[in-house]
Amino acid sequence: SRQWRGVLHEYADRLNISEATPIVTLGEGGTPLIPAPALSARTGAQVYVKFEGMNPTGSFKDRGMTMAISKAVEHGAKAVICASTGNTSASAAAYATHAGITAAVLVPEGKIALGKLSQAIAHNAELLQVRGNFDDCLDIARDLAENYPVHLVNSVNPDRIEGQKTAAFEVVEVLGDAPDFHIVPVGNAGNYTAYSRGYSEELVRGETTKLPRMFGFQASGSAPIVRGEIVRNPETIASAIRIGNPASWELALAAREASDGYFGAIDDDKILEAYRILSAEVGIFVEPASAISVAGLLERADAGVIGKGAVVVLTVTGHGLKDPQWALKTADGSDVTPTSVAVDTDEIAGVLGLSKAS
Ligand code: F0G
Image 1 (cartoon, rainbow, N blue to C red):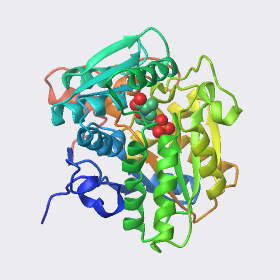
Image 2: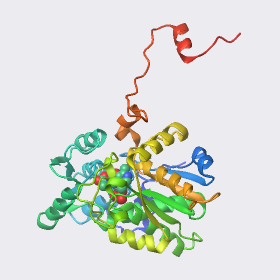
Image 3: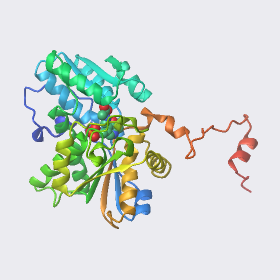
């Protein structure tokens, strides 16, 4: 038996690294691809969930961050910077501190989940809350990286996309081919681009017989790619993907073209409905942005685009524990209050509706 060594070691021959690259890893990747019978039953498709919340900092960002921080250290960087809706900052903070360098992170004030804010602070980041949105933060991070000695680790850094493409390799290893459809949440569209690249490389290597159709979903209030224009004041409860001017917009459009892909928009109430289905019926706890993959599946199956028997992989990008408050609301928006009981077996049996075995 051996321990999974992280994506740079596991896929060294398929990434742009060399003997000179100091590998900074927390053991990311190797995440489970989980069959989801409840989603298969609802759609007639064969549905699998790639659970990226199982990465060391609880999101898919770790795959790209091991690469970006390793390359930054190789090039002598002492400090990195990123803009973030929370997950990138948590990941950058963890990998930077592991490597002994500084992470500065810019987040939109009051707009990131508490779990993610706590992670960046715990990992000793220089965290600044900017009185603006994510797009403002990214503009400033790019500006700083251009004019000051800090290395940008947002997904506009190609090393990030390189690392993230490894998730597609793992899917192919498990399924033995590419799926028919692959669905991801879309914010900056970096991950959509990364999976597309990973699957293209697998096809060229002869490991697969096809490209999956890549389907990406944005929240309706933050859907610049679907609308074909920048959204100045993006809004959605899915804070991770509250982005109005995606960094990888052009790359993602090219990738959609290559795979006969699709971008769609999903309303917040449908995102939360999918969030509940995934946690209550499949047993996988994610943050709201991740649940949009499930909502997108249900919508495309309803529309007849994803047919019976199709093999579908949904990437769920971030762990539910990062932003758990949504689990404590019902569909009509009221608070869930767990029932309080006395230290009394009979009372508790009664509340649980149990009757004594005879
Ligand atoms: N899902 C989660 C949980 C995310 O945190 C993000 C992006 C996405 C999906 C979208 O991925 O940007 O590659 O299209 N989060 C970034 C961040 C913006 O700062 O953590 P994308």
